Image 1 (cartoon, one colour):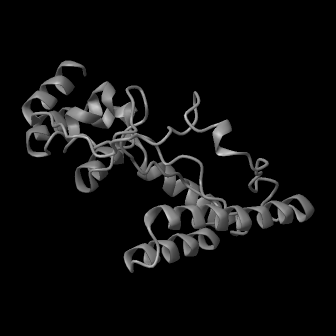
Image 2: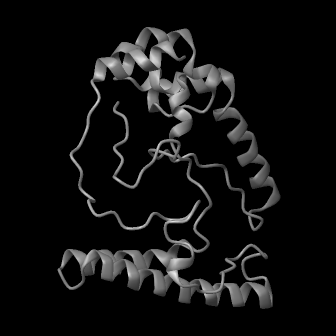
Length: 203
């Protein structure tokens, strides 16, 4: 278990790291009896009587009570800081999954195409990111039109802002940082024992 690295654009107080905190999805198209069964199963696997065992096997916590269970206190020394981290306030610094991508298949193909073009040397990373941003805007604009016209996305499709000159938001409060002169400062590390000590003291 190690603290997530962060780049030169990160500032104190910003989110750090990532954890995939998903949820249960029950489709409206699923027959009602199947939905009821799925709901019961979801309650079963997240219940206190099951979660401790499940977390020992999969090491993916759901309940705070599980993180603090005495069986994990006994096992903590073998899990490389996982237990200490999730018992400490530092865990809130990790970003959750966030807002879901409005249409994963439509947008994912754009990501992979641009990643491939960078890897092949056809585009620089900046060129690929600029192209990707434009392509995603085009796709999401079409999604917005479909949603506004026919509720294609149940009224929850993307809503795009009008394009603006980057100077209006770049480097401003709550906006993306302006480009730094030095994007590769010397790296810094923290001693593992010091990190565990900090997490343990702040549980």
